[in-house]
Length: 183
Image 1 (cartoon, rainbow, N blue to C red):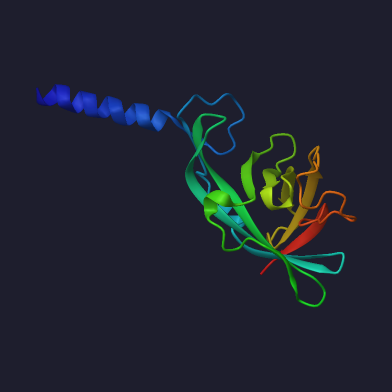
Image 2 (image 1 turned 90 degrees about the vertical axis):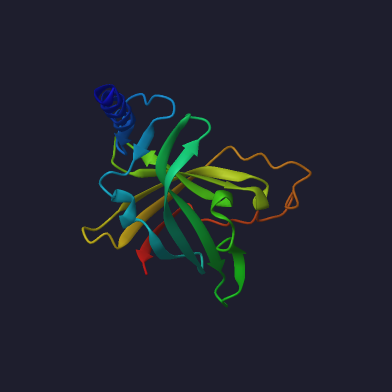
């Protein structure tokens, strides 16, 4: 009886570890598996970053989240979330979601891209009429203190129920391109 119990316990532990995959897995991932940051790569991105664009200063805080369930892909994964604050040249706050709950972050991570080793994030801003896009980030230096940022805007359709409908120029919370410096 003792041997049967040990065999069952060993089988369960093996099947649980078999469901954990490295963050850079580029094959199909089964449902309820765990895409884990085994090499702690996301830790390099975590922290406060600062950038300048169009006389505005942006601060972005990237935070590593672990064991987050992806409802679309149907598996768990480690990822980054991003919260930002944008100031005009006089220091006035234009956009700020630093204090929002992590599950309401407007920027959240996908995964590393196989083709070019860059990290892909999704942006969706319900406060700006669901403006959305895909953000690609990557380090530009070996010390990992400079981060290249590129926002590819989605096909954002602004309807008449949007508070910014017919506003010219339409508010832009995030730049399309910039270099961020770790603070």
